[in-house]
Length: 277
Image 1: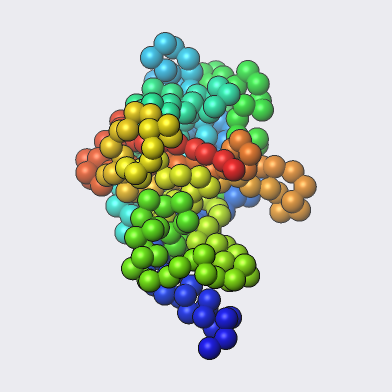
Image 2: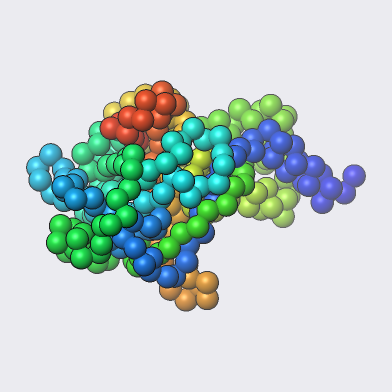
């Protein structure tokens, strides 16, 4: 059997064992006409009477993304079918991450709107929303329209369960040729923006209980955070001449929820983390 055939069969086996439904998100360098449309960056939707979320000491969080749930293709992720999910983080020098407690919804927030008031205008929101003082603190540099497509992805190298799958397959990755290893790595590290499916980890999966205390100082139990509400990746424009989105040194961000909390539409304990190369 040729090496090429071996690696192709290995990849197909891996795909069969780990593939998972997800919604792929595609960005477009076009500012949405309405403030309530699905998008990354820019101005958030804020209904009449609503204020921007803040930290416990009063610092305003900043808008990262929102998507209309009725625009998503039919899926089995467990999300509500109508309304909007909206994602906010504190734009400090570490994008609001709390490495002692990734569940504490103080420097990040996910807001669920059961209904969307389409009479809200940009002018309405501009009166209430303050952009980051330093525009470069926001990883999403410009307002981007987004669209959705149903699909699937596979488990990444950094996933907490990756070693289990490899052991199940009976494969020693160190025995692969460099060419085969590189091809497998590309398969198991699908870049992009997702809802549902497997997150892509460029470093460690903080949900892995085996992480040493130096990496996970609080040693909190994140095991039940299995549903990916959103992965936002770093992204270049189509001509690959400028950054559209940049998390640190080309990383990505994840927002997770537990199955029980999602069933209760409780978004008060969403787990947030980002990392980079």
